[in-house]
Image 1: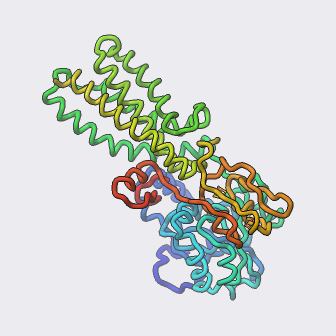
Image 2: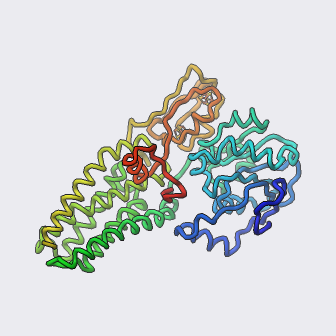
Length: 332
Length: 94
Ligand code: SF4
Ligand code: SF4
């Protein structure tokens, strides 16, 4: 595979390996942590695995390197083609939501790569999670290719092929396992910390005039609340017995804050600080937890809007009142 | 895992449906099932409004108001008056 991939013949078919190298895994880790994510694209076009011929299956995927890697590593021992669409370096699910993994791009990419001369059949296997962007019957009408939606997870591809391109209901269903949720948490925590820099700045300024300056205990109790909202709540999601994400975060936030104000001695010695934190921090955890609806794979948009109509005003009011208590207790 | 109840906008017009099976093929949450040569909504509350079924139904028998968004994007949308959109790459929320 050419390292550059810029320019060149759009009809060029690049052969690729199915084993991931060490560099691929390091790259994956960096992407998860949000480092250099934008440069993680691969050139769109037609790729081959093994030694395919005109009757070999064609898989369609996105030009996001993680997506591409998780697909190719499941294709070991097969002879097939991969048609990579230009999704601007975004994964299939998100790109389908935006429409870049869509009918238009697929039809154009089929034409540009000359796919109809490369294979004699007219079947394309698309990842099922790409379906929100595609109009299968439009693709058929405009390109002559049949869209077959494959399994949700690339790891089921061989079973899917063995069953004559039939996916079981199991293969069709999205899961949201503890592992799935855990790998998403850094992308919740890091933006959360960016927002927190503002808070730290304000506390730093307040310390110039504060009668009780903010110290390490304040830092710990605050960081704890951020971690509860961005990491602990997503991981424990199904165990917390309420359905609204904000409420899940709030419940855990109350547990943490109540424990910490007691452990750090604000309860019973400094009630303004204790109650200030009990108002502010669970709401902060609730807000971060609610943000996880964007990453979850089972929340509906209408549901999120309904939840927010209830939760956002309460979150703002409690944070404001709590901040006033803290200000009175610690600064003036 | 289940989210809020009785809130999704999914609608199926059984009169238009010819039972081609696309909707139960594409739905990632098993919302549809075949019933007497037509589609039937088995479990509406499981729908996440991804829009895959509506987009792929050749007979336009399904409607759903689809959208994805994290809370931050929705609040931004509310404040700026724009359609809330979760920039998968820009705001890194999914
Ligand atoms: S995709 Fe449309 S026509 Fe086909 S079974 Fe579903 S509702 Fe019926
Ligand atoms: S919108 Fe998505 S989740 Fe809801 S029924 Fe249709 S395919 Fe299933």
